[in-house]
Length: 252
Ligand code: UDP
Image (cartoon, rainbow, N blue to C red; front, side, top):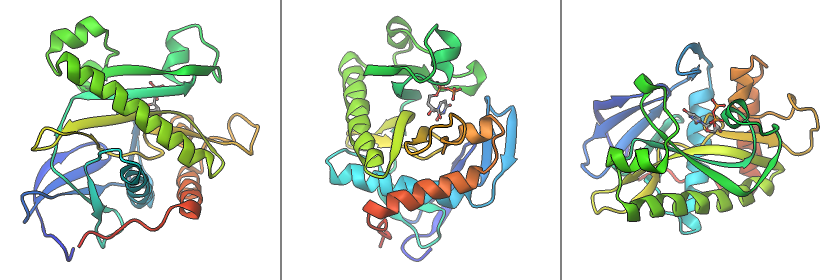
């Protein structure tokens, strides 16, 4: 990498590795080709996925930033599956926004898949694989002391804002944003920002032009449901976004 040199490994997750760099205000994120589902019970390596998720996330973070949504994103590196971001203290919450009922919502409640959710649902989960990322109640969230009441309000407001912007971005290229998960964190100066990634690993995206309930899927459900064509679907998402978004900037 020309702009910064990756240093020690700070964290390895299921889909990414995070490294310190020679600059204290920059960390480097390497997107892996590894795919996991069902709390890592299902695993595979999908060559090309890391690069696609890195480039898709970069485009989306850049478009969010252009619309005034604060993110940790700084730019991509000159290697295709590396992104440079600001260091943040990630809040161990998975913030899920649902525009259309799918996935766990339909397994856990009598709601038909495909039901429009207006206003969109905002579900908070405690991010800890050992506990299976449980859905939180407000009282349990309060008990965990992860965030204060104002921060709780700020988290939902920011997630709904992200939803409004992403929906428009995806709609413009013929994709329906069914639901997504984001992670948020605090920067050194205590600003709440969107962190982690936004990609077909973390969003449900349906091709609006296709009626078939399996063929229209362009996200990780292709992997979860053994539908095949996972990398091709992610490639289609990137290609579509590239129609309206400029190339992500290379961090200098
Ligand atoms: N999601 C994610 N990571 C998780 C759990 C969910 O990125 O650990 C995303 C998932 O891809 C979907 C949304 O969050 O876009 C809602 O997922 P859901 O609760 O329906 O769980 P699932 O059916 O994927 O188990």
